[in-house]
Image (cartoon, rainbow, N blue to C red):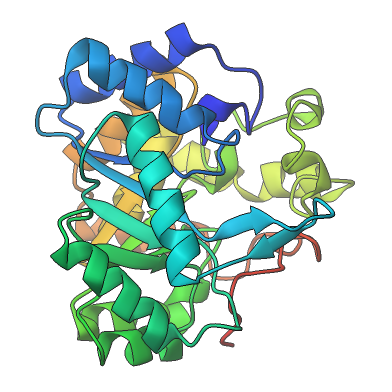
Length: 310
């Protein structure tokens, strides 16, 4: 998502440098979507693959968000739409198969059982290695898993966004699905350099998000300071503590942080390379108790699409 300028300007050269550093750092899971920059993110990755080769890199992408004739954002989980969007993604990514294909947002007009059958057919045809859903409820996961094994569910999950602890993390474990945690460093709040007001203004998403607007931004920077203090005491980047905590929540939990900076990427990698001991995890939970973050996860407009379940 960062490659498409979601959190501020990004160049293709910077994106290539991050992909190079990711491969050098042992990262082999790359997540994108057809709507990140209207295909820009996929195209950048495709050009990088053409130049460098895919190697053992596993690629995940998504479909299901589109626009109607009036330009309004809508969701489409129909067989025809998912197939056509997947073909377009494969072309941009310069690959014949993606390892993981998500339904980005659920379309209430199409029963999830029917969507699962479409995805299972794409898997059987060799177009995708596995499939998953993004931002769905545990009950939806159970319905899909009754039709065919679901490889992964992607949801925001971090020290500041704990909703998956109220059923989704557990349901993923029960069904054998990976819980793929996006924004595991809280869109920058759980780092040594949280976004200030100027940086927030460069992102159309952040400047309308309740956790980064008005007085909540400073409140959240202050409320997350204990984690930065603990990271300094442990001799680790703050992002490493956030990543390490996320990965410690279950063997089935994966983290997909995004960044526009190679230096920040190295901080994130440190969290995966340095598993946190039990005492440090207890202290993290003590300093960052459930409910510490000010403001809703999404604005009303941003909340359209994700399934509520608690």
